[in-house]
Amino acid sequence: MKNLLDVDDLAKYLKLQKQTIYNWLNQRKISGIKIGGVWRFDKKEIDKWLRSQSRKASRQENNNI
Image (cartoon, rainbow, N blue to C red; front, side, top):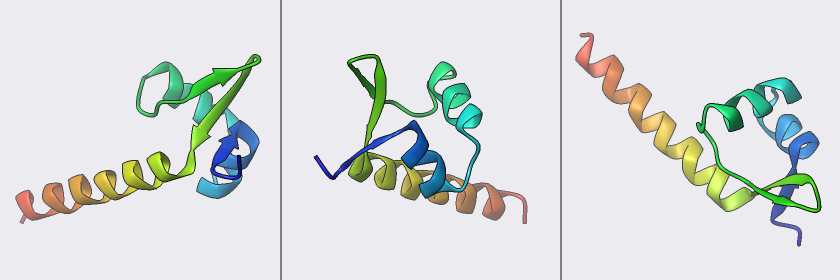
């Protein structure tokens, strides 16, 4: 499926280190599924999560004004 990303793909997509992805998984900041011992992420869910993080950041900025 082309909408599933592995850790390498997700790290490249978010311009992060792979270890950051593993840390976020451990901290339950992001969710994924393990298929055959490999973490996979639904790109649509990651995009939705990114939008929600953007809204949180905007609210925090407004509260600090």
